[in-house]
Length: 294
Image (tube, rainbow, N blue to C red):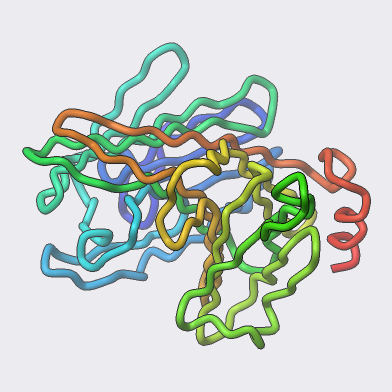
């Protein structure tokens, strides 16, 4: 099935529980996602939001995208408006970008819907098609509509057997204030209330739990990934990050830093799960109570 996203051609895939729409010629981008027959896109739509770069306008669009970390301008903002190719094999759809002109990096996102579940697996890949080694980390960014609560699980058990070493760290971006009312610090979880406010709020940390969540209007979203905490990460060691601005909230995971020789690639996998109500998801009762009262 085909569609349209503000003038850009799309393709739609559906397993009866979840419907996913992605761009057919630009990206790789997932732009819409519908759960259990709902007509509301779970993802943010910001078709006019853009950054002006020496290589042309970069459009955020909303939805889900793949970047390489650490963030830098204009490297992170290279336009992806054309040149996408689509490959299909054994029930998986792979969206492959054109070669980035300034970096010689080629991006791809592979999508596999789970049978009879409101779930999918995304495999993100960065390939170095240049002439020299590069260091980077795959960075998977999902923009959601505002109005919900982001859940960032924290490590509470000791890091070492003698309970002498620190067991967690929190990274703040320069525009983030400790006094931002959206930011709620708790022992087991950090919550970010996804509300429009200036300046934006962004935090990151080394996530040991292997998941982050978003609870909004009766739908719980969980993004699972492998937390390879023994490896180096960008952004002072962050593998999970959240940004909240005036138009959307971003739920992000980051892979370990990798040094890619010419022709080499690195992958980063996420599993997305959507649950209708908190009773359907395996969360601690204490967390369900906090979300239910939010």
